[in-house]
Image 1 (cartoon, helix red, strand yellow):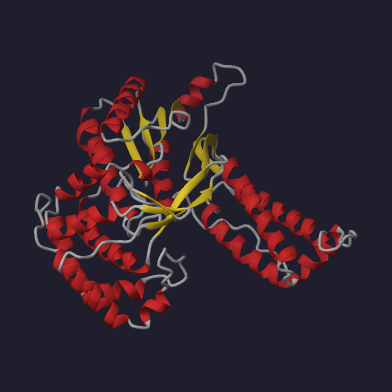
Image 2 (tube, one colour):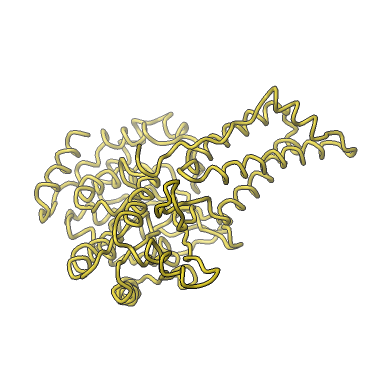
Length: 436
C-alpha cells in the first residue's frame, strides 16, 4: 500500500497538471488495517463510545463491514462530539471528537490527499507537513528578516480559520487534482456529518472540525490556493523589491522591502480572504516597520524602538549580536508564558492536593514537562525566559507543598535541600535558529 501511495506521489510530482480519476479503491481493508495500527489508542472516544481496543476485538469483521459499506456508498460518518477548550483570551476553541471508525476513514483519506497534494505545496508552507516543523518555519522567517531586504512585516491572523472553511471551495480545490467520485463523496459526507453539542445535533454548513484527522491536509490545500499559490505566482513576480512569506497552518508572516507594496498586498489580502469565505482578525493583524532599516530610522526618534511581533509563540524583536551587527532575537511571548504558568499552577495543585501524590513522583512528572517545554522554547536567545519559567515552577511547587496542611510547614531552605537531592531539569537551548 505504501508503494502505491509513493507511486501516486511520484506521478503528482512529475505531472503537476495530472488529474487523478480512480484512486478511491485504495481505501481497502489493507489500508484501513494499516490506519488502525497507526492510530493512537489513548484518544478520547466519540459519541459511540468505542475505543481502539474495543474495535480491535473483532477487527476483521469490523473492517469487512466498513469496506462493504464504502463499496456500496452506504458509509455515512456519525456526528462528532464537540467540546470547548479554553483559550488565552477567556474564549474557547471548539474541538471535535470523532468516532473511531470515522477516524480510520479520515486517516485513509488523509494519506491519499497527502500523496496527491504534498508534491505541489511550496516550501513556504510549514505546518502539518512531513519533515517540517515550527522551528523550521522560525528559521526561514529569521533568514528573511536578517539576510534579505526586509523593511516591513505583516503579521496576520485569520479569524476562526478552521470553523469558516467553505465546503464548496474545499471540494473545488480538491477537484483541481482529484476527480474520483468516491473520494469526493467521502469528503462531502465527512464535512456535512454535523456535531453533537450538549446532546443536541447541529448541522455543519461550513468549517472542518479541529480534531479531524483530515482537517490539517484540507486546511493546507485551502491555504495553498487562497494564499501561497497567489503570493508565489501573482504577487512575488510583480514586486519590484524583496517580499517573502512563511506559513504555519493559519498563522503567517509576510516580509516586504517597500512600504507601498506591503500596504497594497495587505489591502488585496483582505479582499481575497473575503472572496474565499475568510476574514482577517483585525486586532491581531498589523503591518509594522521592522528590521535593520527600521532600527536605523528609529534612531532619529528619542526613546523609540522598532515594534515587535509574535509568531508561533515567540515575540520577535530587533537587537544586536556580540559583534554589534543587527540581529533579530526572539523570546517566549508573554501570553504563552502566562498561559503555561497558569496551567502548571492548576496541575501541580491537582497532583499534590487533590490526588495526594508523593512529592518525588510530582518532581519526576515536572521534569518531563520541563524537558518538553525546553525542547520547544529552548531556541537561540531565549535562555532568560526558560530560566524564568523554571523559577515560576519552583515557586508553584513551594506554594502547593505548603498548602498540603493547614500549618505552613515548608520553608525555602527545605525546598532547596529537596531540589539539591532531586533537582528539576535545568534550562537548555535545544534549537539553533541558524540550523546548526
